[in-house]
Length: 350
Image 1: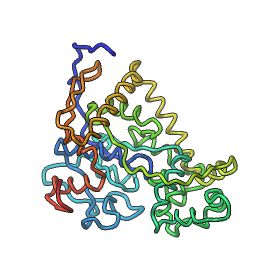
Image 2: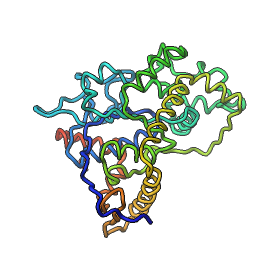
Image 3: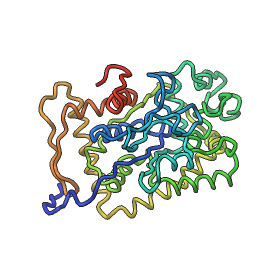
Image 4: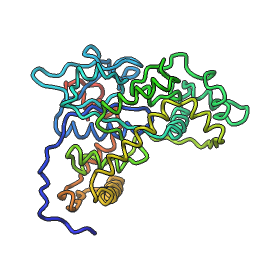
């Protein structure tokens, strides 16, 4: 065990409270949203909230599919106050975002994953939905359904491109115009905009590393970034992709591959500059996360969990209430925030 540095000044930096999080479908964004929702709720910060009827379709989306964030599709901030956190689904638009979230005040954050794992996650997750076009793909009986889909994906795609989760969805969420898909020069130019605008893009495959970097960058605590994975589903069907399938996927999702490969390099450059003890802290955080997971899994828990001080942070406590907040799904927490910020009761407030 590492010796505790008793001379460590745990309050030498100021935590960042103004965060724009651009959610990307099936890239761990609901898990990140829970982190931000807990952080903002515990500090009574102002969230950006969709101007929508209680639990209507797309209740956690700002605007309609393809819309960005505008004053008319979000609830106004209370008089004399300002927005602090945005973590709902919305399509990125640099001009619209800058107007409401000045880049000199807000930390711009997002998360992506490898296009292959994204594709497989979409199939696993939306394969449960009977109304999803993914069901049509999985219903193909002529050989491997994913192989058949990748031979001619246009034949199975939704009529409205913004309803597709398999056609460069990560890039589309991050604002790549639909008509730019397939145009390599336009894609690279747009990726440069994302690299310019976003302070940090997490990689789901390196989630703990991403969170420790974020903790250091935002001057947050372990308690702020502890997480329970959200929206993970798995069906029993296994689909093996051939080398030819992978080539076809790379062609079909060329924008997502370019996006990931460019931002992957940026990610590791930031990590290399994060400090000599960075990976030691990542390992320490993994241990804390497992401790909290086991503690919260105990339904009969009565005593608080005391996490000892380390050379990175002072000691802190996890309670049964913390476990409850960790366990809330995105929509449950959204109901809670509507009530806390505006007194709007969507369902029974928690």
